[in-house]
Image (cartoon, rainbow, N blue to C red; front, side, top):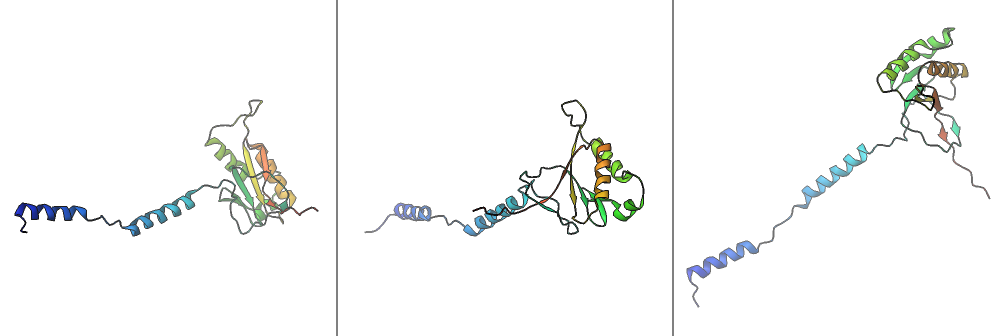
Length: 169
């Protein structure tokens, strides 16, 4: 049986529309891979302390996790506030002053850049975390604490490595 030209045209048209659209999965996989890497890199972990190879933290059985606050790092060589070198330990230990003027100046500058945090008595009070190497002398740590309390940074905490708890029988 012969088909009319109209029937032939309709048959061609239906064949065109029956083709299934091919989905290119390679592009989708690339997009999802990039998305996963982006989310992994940008997921903020506020419990992670600054990484300084010069500082070996003491161990403790402390249970409280660190919060996001201003950090002061005390290595055997330098005093660092938020990754900015403030002073050399040898220079600080050579002076007889009970405080560290460069540290006081830096803390006052950082406090002036943000709104004050008031305690129950209405006095400004800020938090600071000290990351001190095990070998740093107590006299230096004491000077750092005294310098902090002369500014608004009166809440001082120390970073330690969490010691694995031993199993009890």
